[in-house]
Image (cartoon, rainbow, N blue to C red; front, side, top):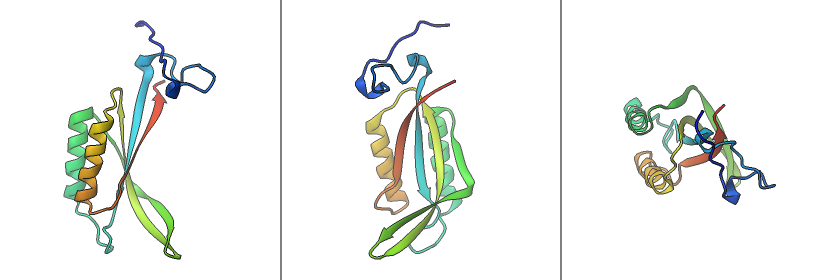
Length: 128
């Protein structure tokens, strides 16, 4: 086994000073991308749009998990009524997290899907 390198930033601790990950080489980010299934007029997006995104992410990160068979359902209140959106969730695991790249990528997705906002979120994970 390689040398252990402890994380030292307060954002990467459990609150009591202990690191979230036992060793830096085990620590990763899980990035989740929530993509809409339909546009704002209820029309499904073309499969080629998702295929291009899949290809780009696999090329950059070496893999991708796409939750496409049972889209997630998002609900929220807006202007006195409940709105609904079905989403596909993409997941990428990476040891190197470039926040600026992800912000640019999110902006590209928002344009491609004609959305005010696409949710892209990153979680600290420990690879077991």
